Image (cartoon, rainbow, N blue to C red; front, top):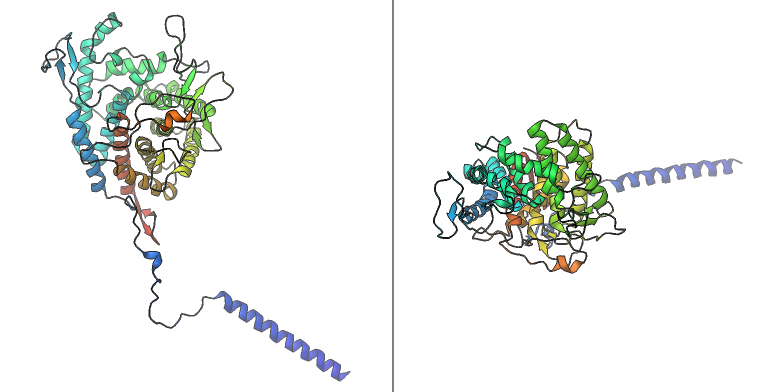
Length: 475
């Protein structure tokens, strides 16, 4: 009996010792191993820190570097877009703007001063001036706006009296037929007026603001559309009756929102929010997080072609609406939510070197500059305003800016811009659209992007952490 009791006690002691040893070993195993004795460094000990040959700068550009890129673009545009009236027959300058000369035209340049693309460029110049403190940018817009205001004063009475037969150097603006004729220009006028530009904008805003908010064709629920009545008993084919173009979110909606600020009438804010949500309900693919380019009311299926620049116009429209929409407006959070959903979708498709593809979700389509510039602007603006997380989207915007900056050649032209593009129902159309430095669509977005990147990197610090580029804190 005693022997048995001894064996039991001994067994318990042995078991306790084994458990204690096991626990001690487990605790020791979870601790960091002791440092090894120093010896010769292995040849591959620092492989993680090897120099990487990124094709574009993998860092945040200093403000002076960003401005240097913008300055090249400015110099090119200032030299090739003269703000001058000439006689169409002789080519001689018309110095006095005191009467409506029948043969007067704007002096030809590389780009038109009254295109929707140049409405974006005027806004970009204003933003660049504000971000850099360089008055040349602001003066560029004010000088050309002042010329347009003078031409409106001189020629609008004649166009009103005879819309079909009257001559005017800026007739597409004075007698608009589509949002392209009025919307982006109107946005630039309203932005400049809000910034205190010394130009008489009243008559011009009356023309373009009224067209966008009251005269442009709409679907029955009020959504801006193309393919309305042609005035001859038929319907316009753009490309089919009752067609929505995603582009028109930008061509009309920021102006509608700005008219709310301009007039103090909340109905414009309501309309702007309605446009964003109704376009999105029809055209935003929530699974992919991106928009289709076109939608035809009444069709069962729609062409799911996710053209990059149209997606740019959409996200740009949202940041512009939020810039003036009162935060207590009932639709404010819905617009912010839609902006965030779109930004998340775009983030999935950014190419390794910073750009986006012509058809966003088709990586065998070419990398396109104007869309990338627009995304850079909109995402950086959204980070600066707190709509998007700086940790997630700040590096994304910087990567995109560095890629876009690399598309500016020594002359100040921007390469890789898709030319003007209608709506189509097949991928070949988008894949094979040409690119050109004379496509006006990329110049304003680059200036907007550069201005917002300067502001973002002035507000937040980005740098390397274990060689990865990321947010490092507020400045």
